[in-house]
Amino acid sequence: MSVVAISPRKHPPGRTNRARLVRPRTGPTLTITVDLGTDSVSPRLARLLELLGELAESGEGRLSHGVADLAATEDSGAVRILAGPRTVLKGGQAVPLTRIEYDLLLFLAERPRRVFTRLQLLNSVWGYDHAVARTVDVHVRRLRAKLGPDTPLLTTVHGVGYRLADDARVIVER
Image (cartoon, rainbow, N blue to C red):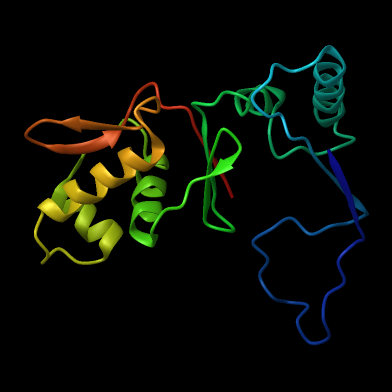
């Protein structure tokens, strides 16, 4: 477990009217990272997660995830997409993906239950549609191989294209 305390942010001179995409810090921030590993959560750790959840619900604290999301990450089949560092974690381990593989997974994870044709994926993920449509098939096959057969994330809709699987356990963190 690691604990990091961060002091409030100060605006740099001359940049006070800059649009902010993140919530500005009004006071010190405490970040707690808990490595859940592959073992089951101990009763003491479960109680800590429960207390953190209560603190967040009361408005005294702020968690980026609910307790259920934290518990789901201990599952080796769960996949976490960290958008900031462009990293994909499976069972707490980093999965090395190419830029296109990462972009394809993130695109489908952000649009669950929607089917995309190969040309739509080429246009949205690759940024062009003049490549061979089978390029998508190759990248999907490589992505499936890297994530392993025990992690069914991408579903083929025969005659149409691809979508995120209904039972896919994917958490996208911004």
